[in-house]
Image (tube, rainbow, N blue to C red; front, side, top):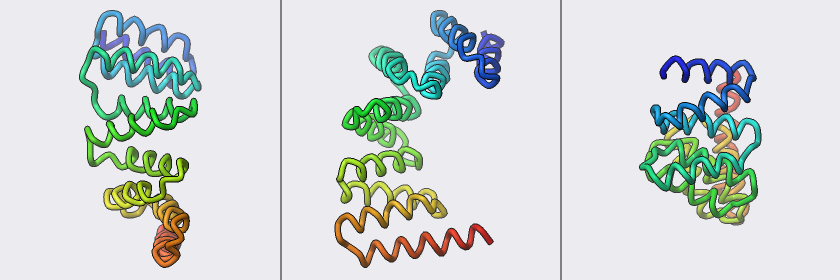
Length: 172
């Protein structure tokens, strides 16, 4: 079974998505390390923009199993890409509830809140993202935008300038 998983992953890396998908499905049928296979298959679907397939696969798996944060993150990505923003928000929230050190979860959730015109929520998530990854200049930039949306120009400028200083430091 492990060899099949490795072969499926090699197919995926080489761009042979049909064979990779077939092997992942075979592994799931045999219940081999299901969560890992679900993550790999969902990632494959997302990379091919088969978001409905990701959602179906993960929701079916979630209904029967306890899942880790990465499964919910992949679900959030799929929902976001089919414009189901509230469902994406719930999936991202669940991901960071399961792993409060998951910087990418905070980042995606913060950007989603910013998109949904919830800058106050976005600020909290961006701050947590920056706490976990202080050199994340993109999070600092979007944090400044959230402050600007609230017309808090003082904090917005502080974070924007901080982003510029860090960007310059990273480039040198």
